[in-house]
Length: 190
Image 1 (cartoon, rainbow, N blue to C red):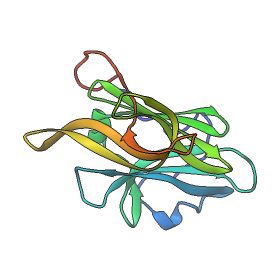
Image 2 (cartoon, rainbow, N blue to C red):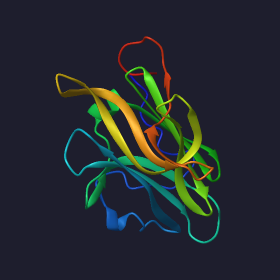
Image 3 (cartoon, rainbow, N blue to C red):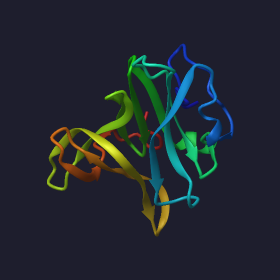
């Protein structure tokens, strides 16, 4: 069976598991919630995005205790279905107390970005590829669009995650996240 999602580091807070009203995301004891990014889609149910959420300790401790990717509409957050998790391999790993790596593998490629604290606020950073092939590293994402690979107009896989971001030099870009090929294996990437 394919590996499922690693939501948390080995020891971490107990997060809501099912459908959760957005208004209740900050109700965990001694933790504060922040939405890092809403990833819109060009396929699927309208007004349902992928949310990237974090939970941090109350107070001034510079740490991110948990990161989660899940569906979001205007009212609730809800987990990905088993069918979605059969198509995607989502890996969320803590690298440092204030830095996590998120990787999504599908269709023989892997997309990745970092969720870190930037001036005390959580943010998503990724490497993007410009039209001329140059790679801009550590570009801070303000918005994102997950676009489908299509056959006869029908979504059949993931094509790209395009982000609007600000580079370390202040330049603004709209470009796809850099991908890594995962080989010729059919189906899921890993």
